[in-house]
Length: 336
Image (cartoon, rainbow, N blue to C red; front, side, top):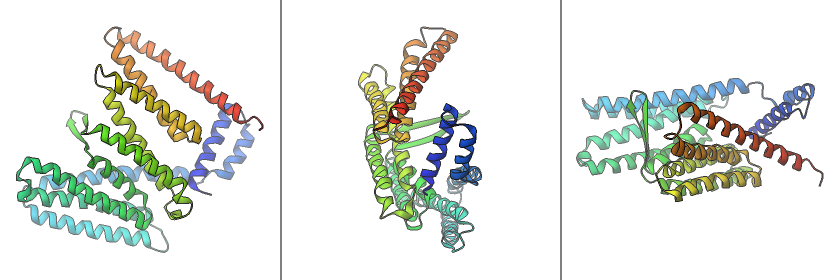
């Protein structure tokens, strides 16, 4: 049984139990049938791996920024050599027949790809090409494109999800999205072309759905879960740019586009019976309504009254969506 189907069944069993549709005894029997005994440990391992990749990857990029000022060529050659060795070690762990440390191998390969991006950027920043501030953007684009293509190739060659996640991050950030730390706990998100990002995200969503529901059934059966990851990234990078575009004061068009996109995702999720579309739609519809509420009433009401009213509105919306979900479930249970 596919992992996604197993997880979906476990979620449905938990939901039925909370709604009182099945008793504890039946729920326990079904849990034993579909629950993965190592699922909790797998979740912990996955999140620890994510933090490890983010922290170590950030350290690699930061080292380039620090060392490139002193003796750049020697340091960058050393970093490139370490990157290649890390990739080779990770590959050997991934393709080993016993597969004892495949997860660790996947992390090492992903870190080596981060090192590749840092190395390429460092080499180009030390050359004459970087003398013009205008060329810095091209250096960034070239480095991130090469690293993204290498990550995509590695992910599909060895059936690895972590390099795919890195490839998608590099792909979207290469389009003109980047973030930076501003100090004192502040982070800045800048989207150079939010409209282009949203359009490309729509294409990525279509590719992800086609990948999961068509390709993974036959041609790419060994790439199970790739379509889900691609689809999720598409939904993230569709909604966030539209939300940012809607933050422009007195621009009703983008407010309507953002709200309409959220409602459309709820509708699509209902048609396809896909909770991912529905979930993103509900969350960002709530964000849209909260943002409009904040813009119009924050300066006109006291903080206590504002949060009280926001809480009441949230409860009403939650009750409405729960009632709608119960109605749809009851409709689906009818014979015929």
